[in-house]
Length: 418
Ligand code: NDP
Image 1 (cartoon, rainbow, N blue to C red):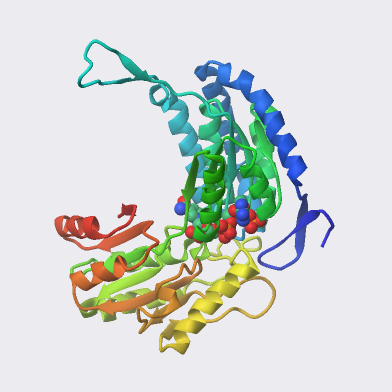
Image 2 (cartoon, rainbow, N blue to C red; image 1 turned 180 degrees about the vertical axis):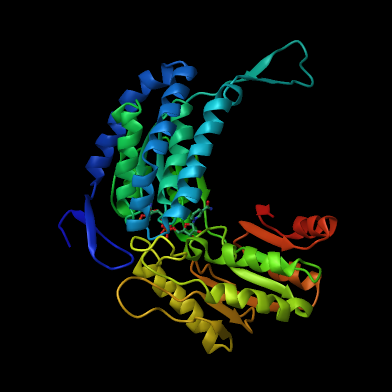
């Protein structure tokens, strides 16, 4: 432990790979002040100029793709190919979209007035000032930089507090943004734990938070005290409903990807499979070999590895507690079911059957490489079970009958159903 610094350890080997300084409350105040002063000039620049600079950021990211993917593999643990597809390509696409669309999105909008026809009203978009961005550890590059791009384009300054676990990527991000022409003061990074995040909320004009429900509740309450707006992107417990007429091979592939990409550390991960009893045996025939084939390993050493370690020991302990609870209550592990001995935070890709609604694994977010599968008798009970969760972020329906799938999707209470 280095005093006043966070030591970052490789999730694959446990070895130290770097440190970052912990920003005190006073450091946060001065970062925000610096950003606030710089924002005045930035906010007055023509939008075209801000778009041009952000396009240079996009080019800078493309040029540094190898460095970004390598660092994400090293400190987050994911395979480089996933870093490229899920983080780099997503962010590049986001910048491409918003730099093209910002003039339309930020144009003043006429407001139709029903009664007062003699008046003309317009909605004008003005920068808020300094946006505080607080991010999680699962997609550290994409999730902190997406809101940063949008905030900067709209004329704001940003101060980012990345997760304590993979924070190095944020320093590399800053380098890329600044080299591309974003004034250094406009893109600040403060490192630290929850206290640093809390100090940030005390000083900025708006907060973009992505993380757990428990922390999101604290963040929203603190923003509420200050009467500043906040966006909270929180956890999920997505259910996949597999109907009897689903294409089972395709469903099995989708579940193997949806449950195990990024080692299951995705807010949109398939966290519960609710399958019609009549197709359970066929689904397992197809799915089990795909999960058995996922060999966990150090993504820094072997680029063919499809599944890395969990990012941190705390998360592996959570995964272990969920699976142990399920096994103690009668679930059966068809594949995996325990942590992998040795260095790093590896956990066996796990397939559970005979799960029941009283198990933690069916109620609380797992955020790890585990697919619990529950056999269901009809569509009504599948929908009811899917809707029992309060974490209605996403859901999935598998069926060849598009109309029926659409109708079921409309009954699943989640932000997005695919
Ligand atoms: P946490 O809620 O634990 O942490 C998120 C961030 O908040 C971290 O930077 C953390 O710092 C910081 N923080 C902690 N306490 C406070 C506080 N009191 N005030 C301000 N900031 C604070 O989430 P995780 O990092 O564990 O991320 C995993 C979670 O994120 C999962 O629930 C996942 O579903 C969710 N998520 C949601 C997404 C979505 O789009 N809906 C996308 C990705 C993830 P520190 O790291 O130092 O604790």
